[in-house]
Length: 382
Image (cartoon, rainbow, N blue to C red):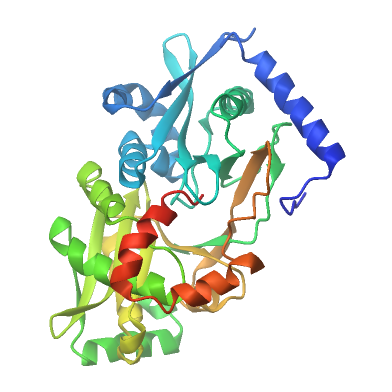
């Protein structure tokens, strides 16, 4: 079903009853099947548990790439929010994990999310039985921390009775990669190839790196977010991504006469590279810097032996969706599911009409001001 995020009193009562039943079922931490679930506040010690998680994460491939301890720690540290991890074990074997970030902000509320910033995360488990045990415990934790709702960002619908499906109005845009960049080049629409050539004739090129590119990346990213009317993420989030995932996260920056005009953060998972953040300055739109950015990122993914490239989330038929489609990308639905205790899951989405005035006003603010105020707001938005 498709749910708009608003429940009738009757539906709220039924959902609460299901959630309470799930909570009672996991109070002991172990079920009749011998699966034990534990929940703990995230800390540096969890990195040492990575060896016990590795077989499970590896078996779930890129579906689990943001549930890696390095990614979870980066999100927690970069957003300045507490993290939790729920583990399911059968004996000494880890058979399921669910990392969660507890978002608290002064404007919107309290939310337990797996995971903010990431387009997909949620439950990593080898069976439906295990996934339901993890969600049972997550629902219980939602009540314990007094969160407004639990949000799980899944690639596929989880049929747990305590969850409802949110509005699935976003899709991932995935491109299958060849071993030879030339093969992918031939599949591009002619207008895309023209734009990439145009950027090269303008003397643009992209360099890859880490912390040495952070200032240039963030200057472009913050400026673009201001133009969109959206609070920018903290700079520390991207610093933490680089600190804790040095082999899997890197920045790309396009310059013109030494000035950064387009930039991205690429995250490399098992068999998949995602551009999790990208931006280009509108003043330089005529240079086709954005097209060069994505082509170089595709080449980078092929260099690393990846089988697929993810352009990030888009709204179907939006300008960004159409742009990505011209590269040969195909839509892949994502399913964000909720356990709602109070409020409205769509209340803080930018599409909400009540934010239109705030968005227009934000676009008028000087960029330096938005770089100060934006992170304080963005860190609490699910």
